[in-house]
Image (cartoon, rainbow, N blue to C red; front, side, top):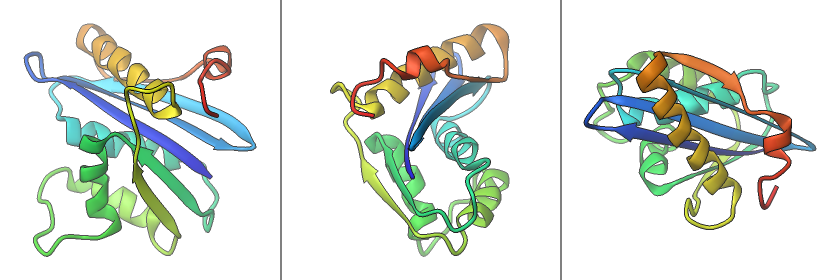
Length: 150
């Protein structure tokens, strides 16, 4: 299964968003956001949302923009000094990823790619969270059908 995940963060207003696109035969995606958050938390929340409902044992190929891939890399190869922030999400992800084969790659958020599509939706989600608070919603299938490279 391929997963493209991206986060966005507005430091001035402290709102953020995340989005993912998942492809394994069928294409699906979600976007969400929150107020008073960080980009790292949004990257973790995006991956957690992407893993929801994925069968145990399913191999994963995760692609994220560089800033988000750096955050997610700590899940793939834990650092000597583990991060002390967002322990709730890190715990959920540790369980979801335990015993699962997965890879992480840096995707280009500027080209016509699924990574760029996810990054654009993450930006929209951050803006929606700024005005409306925490939310999560499916990305419409008609929009997913327009994503390049799926």
